[in-house]
Amino acid sequence: MCESAPSEEGSQPKENKQLSEMELMKEKFAKLLLGEDMSGGGKGVSSALALSNAITNLAASAFAEQKRLEPMAPEMKARWRKEVDWLLSVTDHVVEFVASKQKNKDGSTMEVMITRQRVDLLMNIPALRKLDAMLIECLDNFKDQNEFSYISKDEGSKQGGDNTNDKWWIPTPKVPSNGLSEVTRKWLQFQKDSVNQVLKAAMAINAQVLAEMEIPDNYIDNLPKNGRASLGDSIYKSITDDHFDPDNFLRHMDLTTEHKIVDLKNRIEASIIIWRRKMSAKDSKSTWSSAVSVEKRELFEDRAETILLILKQRFPGLPQSQLDVSKIQFNKDVGQAILESYSRTIETMAFTVMSRIDDVIQADTVARNPSFAATKKSSVLKENKIVSQKFPNAKEEVEKLNSSDVQTSMTLSDFMGWATDQLEGELNKDYEFPKDDGFNGLKPPPSIATKRMSYLENLGASRSPRARH
Image (cartoon, rainbow, N blue to C red; front, top):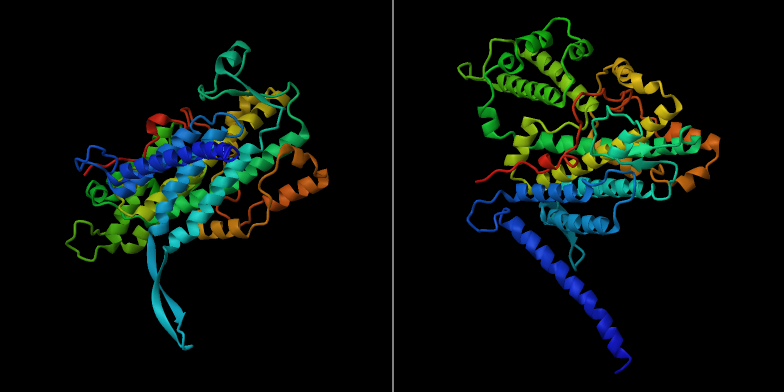
């Protein structure tokens, strides 16, 4: 009896922990079932939007404080993995009927209908889990690095640091006076390329899910009746001109602030939907019909989509457009809501990690060449040649991710073990995107005057759109 007592006492805290986690999970799902309205007054949001909000808010609390290139706090990492598993478990019950052959005892076969997880979830949820794990592992790789550190904004100002940096809430990277070592510099680029693969795949999945969501009626009801009214005379004239050049078009657009870029994106998306509805309007008396030929309208739509594509590629950290917000707000498909919010979360995480890596690379570049600090913005703007390309396809990106044997995670110690010639060969071989890839030839996005924040960095905009009904 005396020997069994410690075992019983030791198992008691474990049981209490399991009970507390069970109660927490019950509370979370009770809130979701009530549409975040714990009063029970029937004023909650839809289940789809409640799940979208839950994933978005969980990510905001888990990753908003990730201001340095360092591993996540163990307790925060454990919480993220546990709670995101709870929320993703809902997709196990979003199923569809498929035909299956069943063998009887007498040896005969018959076809029966069985349930299977819906195909979009079956393909994308495992891919998103893999992307999630790759990002967390990438952050873990920075555990043992000691060549760069961080200083607070106040300390950086006292030391005469760069006061033009508008990311005032993020610590400033500090590198040795002569810059980083060659090995660390290549390792940082290796990590950036790995995260870029994650960003591409997450962007492709998110874009596909949003494209498949239905356009809400209230968004359509608030559209102008023609593309000219949506775009404005100047933009409409440029897009419908006989000689259209997207490079020249965007060069003359004011893209100096985040707000202006999003406004242009909203106008173009609205005009695309207007033109599509006009092309599908068969009744000549319809308010959506038009005297402009279908061929010309298809040409205008193609030009507008080209501009929209370039904006998405050049500014991946932009807030959601009015169309995307409206789709998320009024979407009733639980599976699509989870896919959209989870892919958006990973996309933002990847963009944030890439931004942190870029900050260190920039600090290293300035340390090795101080004169670069004054010219970096203008040089980026001059070199940013616009190229019309296709947007990454979600299925292709997922297949490449699953079939890839490339090692996408490596600590600095592992990296130092590579031979220099092997290192350069692997970097050129594994992370040079194919010619037909949607991101081939893309230059870094130009600097804009305002803060380029992801929704996780700006807690004031961290929540998914809310709709009460």
